[in-house]
Image 1 (cartoon, each protein chain N blue to C red):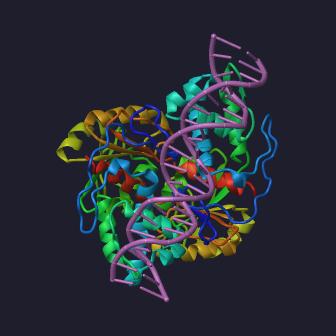
Image 2: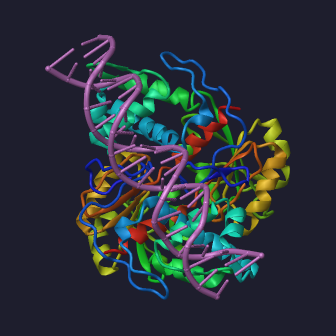
Image 3: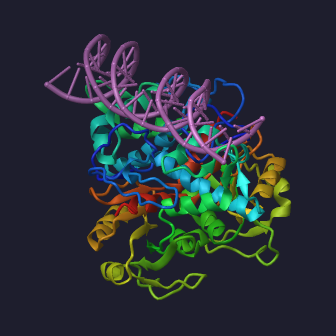
Length: 245
Length: 245
DNA sequence: GCATGTGAATGGATTCACAGCT
DNA sequence: AGCTGTGAATCCATTCACATGC
């Protein structure tokens, strides 16, 4: 959990990454009934829930539900009503008193707030099992995200294609690919031992956001947002609690 | 974030899953200088960091480093010194005043505390891109975890093998496989629309811990620990902050 | 001297409870 | 009557600062 390598202040340490360094800046655009807000002032916890809310709203929409109250929403998905309302209040007023929220409208608002109404171009680096799966993963190829490239350094892999048909290209061309194909986010799926070097590569190539799946805790220079997502950590914490029998 | 479907108390909502329901119980075993502790009283935040600490210690060990202070450890991996000491204090006294911590010894202690000195058997359900990648993922096949089975309901997939050679078996046999092969943890990589039904299957089969990778927020009955890991959420929160430019 | 371990202080996040609208 | 939006209260996690011990 960190941007920049310097130890961060007090916010609850979501053991993934930290906020970006630098001075807060106004960056929320008006959107419908949405209020202006400062993205960097939004806690990681709230941002993560926002994304979860969108997923839940999509499920409700698929069900054909039009309106929902914070109470019912909380009950169905395991949140707390006031927490939902507080989270939303950060960004504006989206509900109708005495009634609730319009499912589709709220989903549209949150999607826009998350910055998913524009397209983000990803480069997946590392074409092993995980890298290929991520490149083919529908969640990474929809809803605002596009796989712009899949890269590896292994000559035996370069030129081959994933099951879904994404071609593996040479990681040596990263900088060129990033600038020509307007890649904004790097997704790391390389071995732990090489991850730190690849981060430096990404930074030099001009990427400002990196999602790291390698099982090491990486840090990035200020100005680059890096998020560590260690899949094994999830299993281990599950095991920790399960060990109570 | 939840075990049981009932809305939970106050702890900081890591938007993944919630604690197990039920009454707290002593469940920490003595281990070396480790103190007895109540697993259920340990916050998800602390448990997650514990796992991260182990990963960091492994890196230090690989480097050949013997001892490290909380200060240096924090500097290298982006933690805060007192936080490390507080986290460790939950489980015992592992350091030497004036000196620091023995890397290997601390790693061994934490590994044991996390319950990783025994073997956990996993069943991956859903043999799509992600399910196959998870079944082949080295992180899920080492350090205390074993892939006991990979299951799917698609007849065309049953009997085929992943790149690493794991055979796909029929999900209809789940209950049998769980009991015969002593599976403890279910890993869901099925489409969102089917995830809830598969959770019920898992519960009926007797699984007590489930890691859900399907992009829906699921809940499980009390007594079953379920953790939602939505890969896309990570991308979306990264996009949210990156949208500030 | 130096770094751990820990009670006390701090600062956030969550929750409460009610005012305000429909 | 019902549900949102929100200041105030609560609860928890983090951080501080120092006593403790090598």
